[in-house]
Length: 530
Image 1 (cartoon, rainbow, N blue to C red):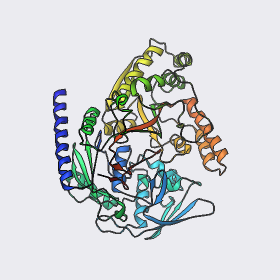
Image 2 (tube, rainbow, N blue to C red):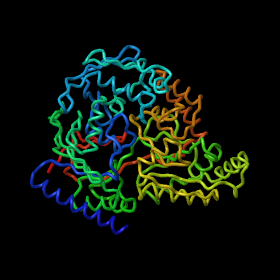
Image 3 (tube, helix red, strand yellow):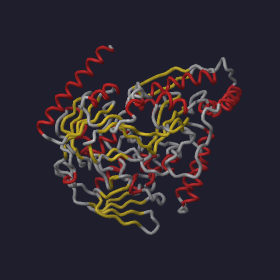
Image 4 (tube, rainbow, N blue to C red):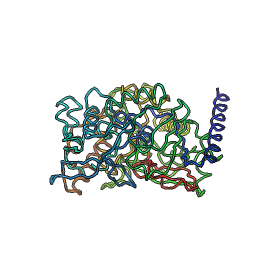
């Protein structure tokens, strides 16, 4: 099996070597990058992972687009904000879908209302809760007609917010806020099934070939409203899961970019490339954590959750497993995000971990000998998630004496298992859509939050979040968010592990690719200076 995998990877390298030669001959501007897996969806309403969002942002566009962490107007030509900061009125540019159909405000209204329907599988729908009655509409407590978005006419979109949100213009650059009417969803699904050229988009790039388990080829869109600023002729996104093979492809000149955010550099190779001129790293607004299924025994007990969390040695993980610039996470909110207090517990606090474990055993009527074997789940990614899980498996055994089994699943199956609560402890992470601590707090604020796989809920926590969002005093807002985070870290429905940094290798002729603190990857302004 291993020999077969190596053979396949070699074939892929040869394939891309051939592509490289033809690229030079044709003098086209082609950017080549790899990802570890095929994007699960190209539907902005259904995105639940970074790879899908990067592909979607190449093919689609909303009211704004982020450029160096700042929102710039895209489909919106202008906007006005009411005095109470709760109503936005957008005037749209004259833009078109790739099939020649005009994009209207009705497209936005239709899409947002579809995503917020109780029966629609939009895992990122909680991002729409900032719009008036978003949460209530998703829970079926009010009708969709009471959701705060309305097309006044073809060119005017009116949005009412639940509370003032200074980051709203950045938020609407997120995929779930893109227009994507039902007719397009049906056509694009057919495209994915038969690989025809019928895909309809409105972004700077358009997919022209989708080779399952191989790669996607995107070309510069001929109908994009801002096509004159797009310098790349094509983007080639390959699917090679093995990180060492990806690095080899880069070293041989078959890729222009290797590593994050699309993939990861092999952890055992990072030390050897850190001093190179083509190596780059930066901190992002994101947290890697483990989530506990708080509805499942013994994780119903907070002292057990706290014991497992404090028994982890994050500094050791970073030094020996990652060998990169991650920071140990002893809170949910990353250090680069503005907040009042940093760190809510001590890393590798073995004394307290054992104390909490004894308390938890007593409360559950267990002993160390009768504590059940637990399962730690992660999505398939051999050089990172598996190694982290292995190391933590050993740490829990050493500190608490417990036995842990490991389970890995491909992303589509994995995310479905988490959504259906078919797990005990699982790897997860959050990168913020905007660099605001409220984004992280909001992830766990609601009883039916899309990405709160822990199923933990605290009315007090939710009330603090809502109180923070309804104040215009920034100091009080941060203090209230900090109070909410302290509740979360006392209850421990999640175990923060580290704050993300990104690292990658990039050819010096690749210019103006935008990567930012919110983990965006933007190719609209990219160019190849060769």
